[in-house]
Image 1 (cartoon, rainbow over the protein chains, first blue to last red):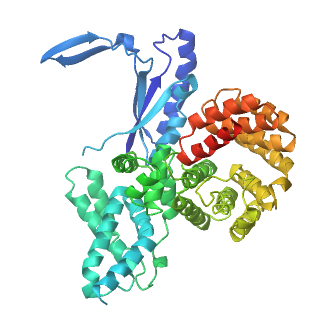
Image 2: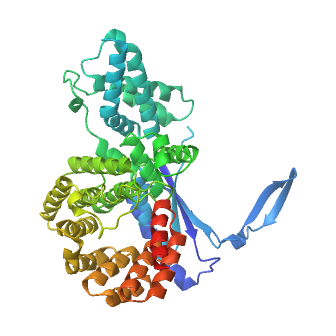
Image 3: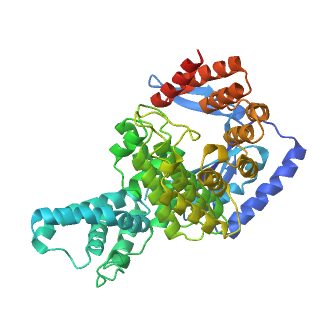
Length: 116
Length: 416
């Protein structure tokens, strides 16, 4: 069973300073190492903020390329982890340790569908 | 045996053992919905076959085995999901089940209802879903009965139950007793669900009827079950004691005309002494463990009331002390409100009003009718009729339960 841990930043678009990154990155490294040590790690990626996003949509049968989204909510997807876990409880234990929680982000836990 | 006798026997079996069968199968499948369907089908098959074949040697084991086969067939019919096929294969490999069919009673089936309780009361489900699932799966109430008890349309309740069962399956909520590190928190969650069920029965929040005795009795039954499955948990005992103390007053809480009677005005000789006695005994058992908790403290407060022969003899100072500790453990505005009422009796109305102001200072009691009832009562005793009247008017406006509103309205009319 795989679960995706979706990290939702709550603070609007942030541009972190070098010093902030220097502080944050080792925490995520350690977190990734912990997941690997428990053979829970599947994949992970941080995402650039929504100001860099481009959205494609079909509008009246036409492909439209849009700048954004400029979401009305301040919440935005900042990255994700996919982990192996036997149950939701195990996945929640991993989510609880995610460094994102320490800097005010919410972590949503969703099962990855088995499409086999 | 004639068919009606068989039908009666099957129904009795269903009432007694269905929850246990569902628990075992749900755990094996990780799926409450499929387990319930399969068990229901197995009972339907029993109704067809047993009139001719006679009762099997171990009916519950027969039901479980039949349900397991049905569940395997259902999984096999699914087109998608390698995991489902693997699960079906695992289930099949376990056939015939490890049930000792030579033992003629239900004890041959492993009791996994505790695991089922923890799944139904999982914190990742909405509180109202936990309540509904627990009533459905462990108390055996129908969706219609639960909908009626919570005053929501049947379709709404049905959807709530379907949605939460789907979540259990899809998110793989475990059917397990949590590890020790999480047990206190998770057990408190379970106790909260049972307490909510009891309260829904006791203080029906809306509609014409004040008390839904059945829900109270279901909550007591479920709490006894939890105590039997998980003995020596002081908070479970505290919860059971609290329910029993409260339920002991059921006959006098409402008078012959169906009107509310306050604790002070209740005829204490008509409290159920046997039930209150049991409540005391249960609380004593809880206290032996030497760790207090919110439910034990609330039960202890109920015990002080039960020990007072008349309302005037109530040891209010003891109650204030218990509330002080409760407020440390559960610093909620409602606890602070109840403490203020106790202070009003222990030290006088003025002190009570001061404590009440402090309890309401953060604004969280602004729309809470019991706050205005308490304020009216304390203001009246302090001789401030204007404040008392305004507070009562606000309480009437905020109360949804018709009987309670009528009761408050009469009090208000008495003032005019």
